Amino acid sequence: MNTPPGAVPPAVNAWNAEYLDDAYERFLKDPDAVSPEMRAFFQGFELARSAGSPPGGGGEGSGSPIQAAADRLIAAYRGRGHIKAKLDPFGRERERPAFLTPAFYGLSDADLARTVRVDDVRGLGATATIGELVEHLKSTYAGTIALEFNHIESDDERVWWLDRFEGSRGRVDLSRGDQVHITHQLLMAEIFEKFLGKRYPGDKRFSLEGSESLIPLLDRIIEGSSDLGVEEVVLGMAHRGRLNVLNNIIGKTYAQIFTEFEENWDADFVDGGGDVKYHRGYSGTRQFRNGKMVHLALASNPSHLEAVAPVVAGRCRAQAAPPRRSRASGA
Image 1 (cartoon, rainbow, N blue to C red):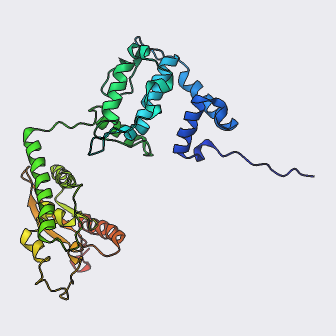
Image 2: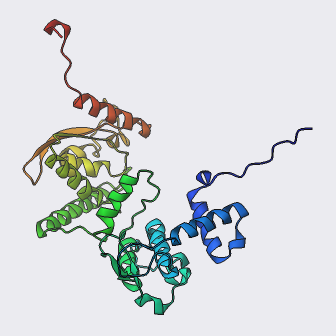
Image 3: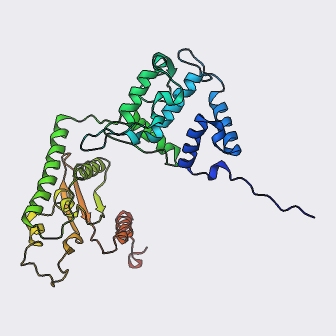
């Protein structure tokens, strides 16, 4: 009599990443808290990380518990440092998760002066004390800006984020002119929304309030694209913030926008009334600070918002494709 096949434990590649992280934390506290298959996997993982020693002097060898703990701390900040980021506009402190503390990995206050190898950490050099490493990771991943990138499947893209973000601790050096320009754009975006709210209090409004940084972000992206030779940009977006983008990015005038709010605007004429102004598109040519002229177009928005994405992609593809010659011209 044939024995029926038994259940086959799922491979580690099929495990959810967050579930795997949580299980690893339980394993570090108590190896018996996870299943035998998972325990064997984590034991092999620990063995692989602690085996061998890098060439060269300085710092703990990779086989030392101190170096292994520092490596796990680096991985924790890169993977979930954003959980501790200072993103609350009221300045309230967020509780620091245990897995972002050196003590979670068996490091004491006395170990903070120990030197470890940090070749893979951008902006620190070959070696650093654990205290220096912790401060670098905190200011990079748990400051006033957060980065979540470990879910990206492409190794090249993850390395690109590490080089750009970790090396500069998430900061961009801006000239005085850049700072003034960004401040001006933020003010214009905020004043625009405040005026609409005060002048048309009873109208349906999809305000950009709270996300005014979208305006300088789009401006910088488009200007940077023009430096790379881009001559035309097609945008698609939902209702919220649309009028602000139309005015401060695309160049639709105040008179054109405010007319659509007035009572003399015929709701039955062509496009109708209500929130139709948040569906309308616009196009125009704008000169940026670098002197480049860029044609900008914001696609009209259907009620089914997800339909705008393929429309924008189609417009871009049509514009980028070389012109087709007719048969009459001998093609």
